[in-house]
Length: 511
Figure 1 (cartoon, rainbow, N blue to C red):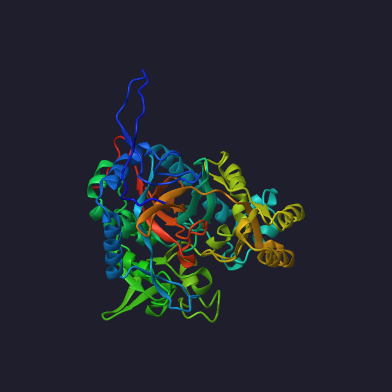
Figure 2: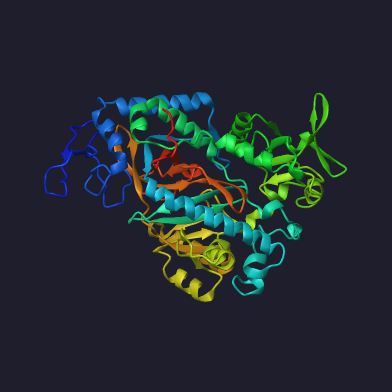
């Protein structure tokens, strides 16, 4: 692997009449190693939207890219941008690893992603409203009842709920991947308390300061209006259409893995950050304890998991929620984002049916496809999975954060045998998918650039079936370990800034 600072080379293209066109830079010393790379082509030439970035990297003095990388890391450390890894015996507080080379998505690729995500969230909201009420999709044989009812996150206590405008998921984070042809697939949906958007905003802040020229020349769409859009959406959720509702962010507390984000978003929106002990219910109304007495609360952006929200209804041992909160919610006196019960659509087994949901509820074909998925609960699928464990990725339906995963081609015979036994013991809990060759992006490794696999989590805000907004970009997570496909921060992954190129007429971020 050659250093980033080694002599750049250039490639020449030709115009349609055979004459030479302007020279397009190659990324100096960088090797694709046969993977689809989102910054350069297979022969190292900058993709059209990456020309300014690649040209800048090539022109930097020796060691300058690493110097900027370290400066950004210090800045993030000083800002206290952390997450928590409960399983790490070397300490739980971690600084989110950040990589200085951004991921760039063309306007055309993003246009498909945006419309596909809007379609998907409309169908998922319809599904949630249905399975907790009429259950048409089950009664008409599209999804087996056992798939839904056996899901640990399907909450019978939420049957009969009817959130305003049929919106159960106001804030969604959907994980996307690109394969070795550059095609986009949905890897999973996160509809309970999706995290990570604070890193998107902070990554953008430090990147604009360090690459102002390349940023300006790349016509990047802005992301910094996310807190304002989130706050505007939450205010519109006020019960009875009230004009000036009181909005709060409900956090489990300082020991939660995403506490930094809870605090950050509350500060950005100018609302109170509260814990369950700060709230109480009187006459089916929610109140917040303040130094001036009790203050009514009308909208709660909750970052507490469903089953901890109300010990009167869910987990009676919970000290994180508010006793009586569900009574206030059912009475229409407080709005919750997201609604309780959305976890059933997070389930990796239910995920396999989202295409059917889109066809059933919307009468459309999916714009964004799922990764092909085998359900180990089905005897035929299970037989195939057990016979091909060395080729597949196996996931536990109830796990997240990169846990409960077997990557067959990289696993030992002992690990595959262990998973085979787990599948036989509890087939409902496992799904399997082909091992995709995930796309890569150049990443700083020591003092040079090497390709690392990435995924993308865009964030979606939904106020109604026809009022859905997708943040232009999202959290690009990168597997920092060579050859690894696991991008989760809890498993050693990091993040990158995501630059979505603007189409003509779209607003461009200011450097």
